[in-house]
Image (cartoon, rainbow, N blue to C red):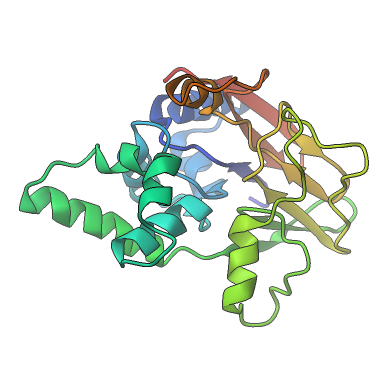
Length: 249
């Protein structure tokens, strides 16, 4: 099957993720065996919600394709004592992930097992077999591909771009008029990382981040929540059908 399903930025919202998958399978008539092998998550499985451990376990169990997100990388850095770990990571949602594990040796081993799995995640997954009517090849990254040449070995700088690029300024969950994700000829880039009120889709890209965590996060941090968030989105490519699931956890 040349079709792919892509979602992103689950952030530990396991029940919402499950509800979205069930909705898509019901709508398409696909069984779990027909659906999950063709599902890709564009990073950020964990943090900011209380079910990241279950999301990781589920993706591993069902062999779902996952690309590296900045939250997976921050956890990896935190676990190895890198400067990007520490207080900033915990403040950015890492405390939710750590709260899902106990203090026993078995629990610490379970966490380390997940982290070792995350270390092996690719930063980019191209799908040459998945092309739209214009012949564009599907490429999934966590954030916008930008000027990264994925046909050559990725440098550390390129890897940073693939998990941190933000093509939009903060504008209430909407891109400014003059902010565009530029065309990369021959490719269709699906990503997340920068949450928007609605999925942004053009002839060459789709940003699917629906800010599933936003309202709860704003309440806990005593800041004003952006409207129109708290969703997970899923795209079927190349059919370009979108499903949305409001947060239920």
